[in-house]
Length: 141
Image (tube, rainbow, N blue to C red):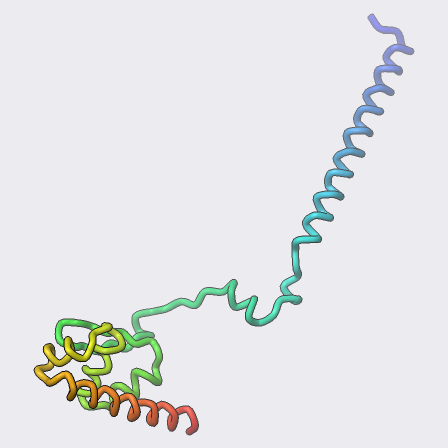
């Protein structure tokens, strides 16, 4: 059996131990908060470009316009481009879609559409100029 003075001593030792543990834990938290404050940046301090890196835009099938080229289906997400392409003749549109969306060269396009390679090249070039004009007029007006 312990005497009252021994029990008081044990109680004081336990209190002292608890204070040390709490003091060290407090120091650890302060160091942890200081490290975090060095590395963290408030969202209000970020630029628009940096903020856009944190977002995701949902895409739905209804947001895409599809064109059929032979057995291939080409999806266009840009509404202005899809509108400009839809205004072209089917032949011109097919040449552009095959060249720029299906990565075919003029020879392959010519074989697919039964045209000479040089004809495909001329139509592709002239159609690009036509598309550029259509897109520029839509952008300006």
